[in-house]
Length: 510
Image 1 (cartoon, rainbow, N blue to C red):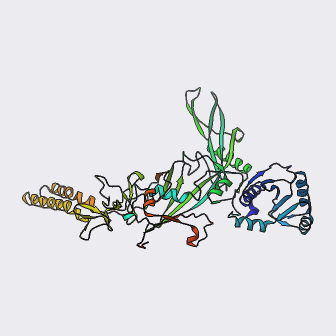
Image 2: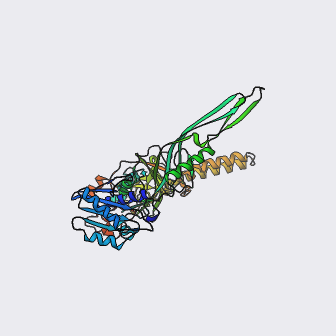
Image 3: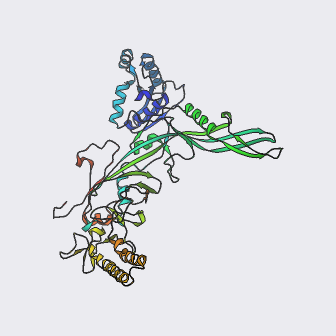
């Protein structure tokens, strides 16, 4: 709730609300002697002065409205606003209504919360002057994900019947206090003073539950530069928790942790030629914390629906790549092995991930009529040519007939081993078993489906495919995007959906 925000956090939150409401630049004055001017709204119709009062259990009285009145006259403004988390007294309301030279609007906690909710801003959204790592904007996210994962080199449906694909995401901005530290420690020994020095980066979560040294969990080397949290949430909606720790509390907790964590053992030889080990730790006074900042890291969960089954996974977005952790997409649906974006193909019929066809990987293929990408289960063969089920002639057989040759080879190997065993009274049994196993190996490679593994490494898809379906397919078949209004759904939350529906000409098929 708003009452859990600190005074500085409340002013930042109000700044976000005013920016979203007026769609213009909002300036924070800062400092304690702001003379009733916490926010300056540079509106095209004139300057608006805002006074923010964080009174969770208090009441804004007439003196505060009078102070804002004086600030309006001094600042040559004709409009002002009072925003508070508490209540507004009847005397303050009466005084504001009697003003004729200026206009002052009063927002108590309930009215302010309702206004923020109408603007799509969570009342628990932490806008405490922190920084956040930006992600792709909501409007650009669905086509980027679809184009990167389902590019034309990976996915082609039969006869160009591109399916409608929905992409939604839920983003949670996890907050950390991050600081650069340098520490020094020393210990007295019989041969003199031994010293040790440390430096690096440390962090603590905004609730104070976890802390550590080194990089923040989920941080990748190629992350974009952080910018203001309010700007990031405005472009990519999500939830950011309110910090439970103040900056001073976070610094104290980091120093306490570093003083107990930083330890170095120094080995030395004493005057009596005996080896000793001395433990050195820095004291809190010898720990310096610099460049401390509040940083929010986006944790995104993506859902891709419309491909027969929904794919869900965790997404980490860097400047150049999308790292998607999804067991179904990172495993071959035919052999169960691990696939990478460079070796991946998406079947145009069942929409499952499969290895791209190579000499040693016969799990997939393409239709020679429409160039559809196919897994082995949906390849039809006629006159030694591969087709999809849609383009295949009536007499086409399933691709499983290709098992005839390796099956015959395995059968002959088994017969050979049996005859050899009978002639040698099964003296060389291991040799006979080995011949049989080698003979059936080609058949096993082609015919044995292991299934889909639910585990897998994140797939690193390169960015840079802005449109799906491809432009040539769109131009030839008349694809048109469907707006959110066509679905009859309210898309004001974190989920962002982009729909594509192919037009089938005069046939009327959808």
